[in-house]
Length: 617
Image (cartoon, rainbow, N blue to C red; front, top):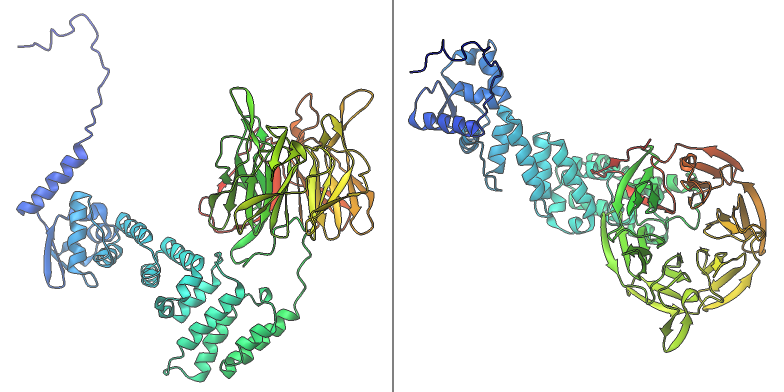
């Protein structure tokens, strides 16, 4: 037998303790409590609902239910009672919740979800309420969305409610064609029309859908004044300024009830007499099918940073005032690709990537839908290319020039010089076809569209910086030379605004020193007069900036001062207002970035995964 007095004689006792934590203790505790319940031991309260009695332990109920915790710990009458009647809770729901309290397990399905949710909401078991909400989100479809919306409103599940109404909005056309749509209450339809969520149809369609609901829900129990009241409330949620006032819409209202025609006519009148929309630049996205829930954003695509090349795409919404992560190009890290926006889809085509210290040029392209937040592949170009221009001209993409893996490619059996080849893409047929080649070799140039013309300027012909400009008539396929720029430019940007084209950024090579020289002017080209003039000087000239126009303002984002050493001061965003001929300075881009491209896209304001970019020091 050990004698504790002799243990450690002559030495100080070791006072270092030992902490023990059993990973199985929680399970053991629950198993033990459930066994006590099954055997009827130590039970001290009976719950009665729908005539059925359920015995339990107060401490277990209080540990997982705010309702019972308050009841048993406060000076309430029920705290002294051994039997408690629960009204508004089904026996099936109570049985399942008790099983959860004693086992931590709960099996949900569409048959029991309302019983469980009703009981969990009544006795305030927050974890189960959240589980029910999450389960209903996974089961959401066009056949049950109205019922789930009603459940979300009955139990004040705001997160679930938002998901349901966003689902209805994104499937509005299909939803309106189902019988479920007409089960919406007037209040629910009003909320649906008030939500700032994207829809998959035009505002004319939204009006037609709303009128169909009004007519289908003209209950005999409502007076004409009551029907008029609800029609007015619903129609006030229509964005009439987005609906063309045309004979089609007037004709659509001919057979409507008098109060509908009168109210719609007044709304139309107000929309027509309202302020005219702002004139947007030709390089901005084409008008949306519907702008509900969408906001025009500046989007930065790819580029380089301190950590190297990146495929990250970020965006800036004026309403939030922050740069956020949008998505990433679904390809190995690449650069020198072409970007364009057609019908509010972002196209990223071609480019090059490094593999075993070897530059590889590829022809593949990807299309991103901001409304769906999804990427899809598209047919590859017939020729791989990088450092080329990609532009939209009348619903087609035009890829011009650039560098290629091969010196020439085939077009119907004829050879076309590699970096003068041009091809166009039709999104309807998902196919590319060659068009007449650009006269002369050209890479690192710029291009911009006006009407059915494509203007191409500057760039490099092998090692020579160019000032020349050509115009492609996409209707005839013919190229013609236009007035040269005021100075050669390479790696610059062309922006169309109204009937003017502005060239910004770029560099040329000093003939005497061989050094690159930044071009610090913004020059303007009159497409009708075929003349150039300088309009302003850039306060902070920079290489490889992202340059984009939003309406009448040109933004310079990122870049660096010189080839010798990057200057992070160019993270500042400078803005030039064409209307007022003034420069302003905005907030810095959160990170150092260069050799990126910038476009404008309409982005949903309701994105759940809005991840604000962290600033680098």
